[in-house]
Amino acid sequence: MNGASPLLEIEDLSVVFHTRSGPVLANDGVSLTLRAGETLGIVGESGSGKSVFCRAILGLAKGEVRARRMAFDGRDIAAMSRSEKQALRGRGIAMVFQSPMSSLDPVWTIGDQLVETVRHHKGLDRAGARRAAIALLDRVGIQSAARRLDDYPHQWSGGMLQRAVIALALAGEPRLMLADEPTTALDVTIQDQILALLTELQRETGMALVLVSHDLGVIAETVDRVAVMYAGRIVETASVRHLFERPAHPYTVGLLGSMVGAAGQGERLRPIPGQPPDLHHLGTGCAFAPRCSRAGDDCHRAVPRIDPAAAHDAACLFPMEAER
Ligand SMILES: Nc1ncnc2c1ncn2[C@@H]1O[C@H](COP(=O)(O)OP(=O)(O)O)[C@@H](O)[C@H]1O
Ligand code: SF4
Ligand SMILES: [Mg+2]
Image (cartoon, rainbow, N blue to C red):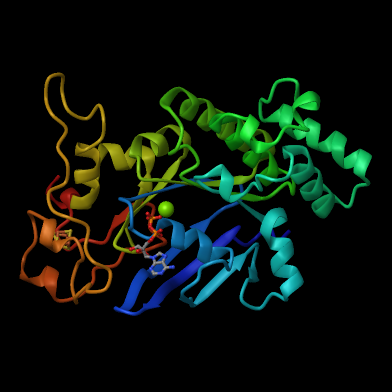
């Protein structure tokens, strides 16, 4: 462990998909720093580049990935050998996806998959790995874990499967968990239980947590700091409190206004007018300009960028805060 370095440093990350209809700029100049044990939410509408960002960190993005720097615990990820990168996945950074079935194989029992993962990370014998797998399932709230270990995925509910996937992610005792929309497919009660579990595990293990969601409500309950993504760029970073009290970017203001509970009783939710931009044709200026009531001529000239080192900053020429 390198105590002086942040846990994760991403500087100027871009991901381009070269498609038949031309290049798609799915991440553009994304910079982000995370300290050990920190919790960060990434929020933005569907298609804003959140999943691409997570995959790029793990070396799983299918597009062309470029970055000035991507480092974990002070070590350059690009310079890691294949085996070091493999060790990074799981033991350094573990990922939980939206759909549990993208991490589980339907033809194997839950236990087989968990035992294999534990053996891979810990080098335990089968009996030891089985005990560790039961302990992990128990830890994520699966009742009668020893008996349920030999079930197949189709025998479990969506909420239980998501718990199993979290157990898989915990198997390598990661220092960072990337949870990409981990509750989106679940109903609200189960969603709250899974978020509470993630919070509990984060506090207990001291791992850092990046929680990705299109739902600001989910993020607000679970993390300390937020990065707002729009059209593949981070447009605002702030503590949760500052984001809610003093949102600076017009897009963030729109997101807050469209949240369930933001409107008064009897009022209707106010969705952000217009559509997210086509990432094939981003143009030269601020990608939010066509939807922004504050846009001026200058907004179309260059892409505004945030200062990634600032505690609270917005990529906007005419931020809301300036008026206060
Ligand atoms: N394999 C791919 N090929 C082409 N475009 C892709 C691919 N994966 C993602 N994209 C594009 O990248 C953009 C961001 O996608 P994604 O990160 O999945 O969004 P989010 O997770 O925020 O909903 C989308 O516009 C999507 O169409
Ligand atoms: S830079 Fe201009 S168009 Fe973009 S969000 Fe700010 S005011 Fe709106
Ligand atoms: Mg996604």
